[in-house]
Amino acid sequence: MAADVRSTLSELGLELPPVSPPKGAYLPAVRSGNLVFVSGQVPMVNGEVVTTGKVGADISPERAKELCRQCALAALAAIDSVVGLEEIVRVVKVVGFVASAPGFTGQAAVVNGASELFGEVFGDAGRHARSAVGVAELPLGAPVEVEVVVEIGG
Image (tube, rainbow, N blue to C red):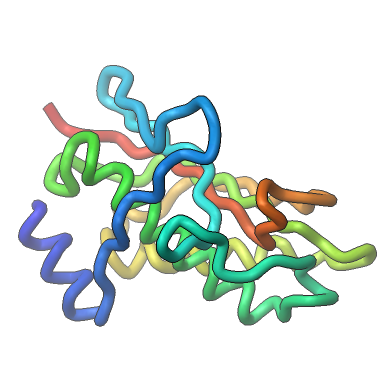
């Protein structure tokens, strides 16, 4: 499957980013049995958050959706570093956190950035259970954070 996933990523004009080093006492991803749990991914480049602020005030929902897509790619990179993309059988669960301005209720549309990416890359195996949660603050001032659970083969 790896060649298929990697070629699909390439066809979409996407490439996996380097795995960001943890900013705390945790691992980017952990395998337990046939599941890989990915720690919350915030939109980072070269180990730094690319933008900060609240969605619905400082950051548009459209931009936040793009940032969720970036977080999903980072999650795939974390999975690849633990088991390899070829092992992914399906995306099981996605949880998206959105640092929301008061009154902002579009969290589901923002987190669609991650969900849609998984659908584009894995087809039906990318369809998953999901939660989209509005929060007051996220680590490092990030506007979004995405965590993922995938099932792996073997």
